[in-house]
Image 1 (cartoon, one colour):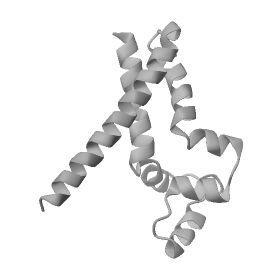
Image 2 (spheres, rainbow, N blue to C red; image 1 turned 60 degrees about the horizontal axis):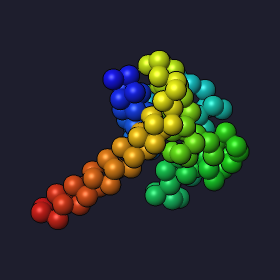
Image 3 (cartoon, one colour; image 1 turned 30 degrees about the horizontal axis):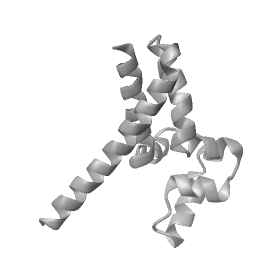
Length: 123
């Protein structure tokens, strides 16, 4: 059961981080200094490119190993799998948690996008 918990938490975290604007919205509300969040610069750049996402802004303007690692679902998924496996005491199952979480995350993403297309076609 702990393996399933770690897998679900990892997949849910990946979905929230990569498929929603939660990171941007929470960083905007939290009283963090601009030198950490770069919100002013992002919002200025977004005026000229309305399709620019917060993730893409970081990759384009602050390219580094750390930024590449946290904006990659495979890389971040590996670290999240380690973390949630440690929390739920199933460290020997890290590979299963990782592969299961990525499969769940990508399957959920595809399924939800298909449902969104289906509902928008009926309107």
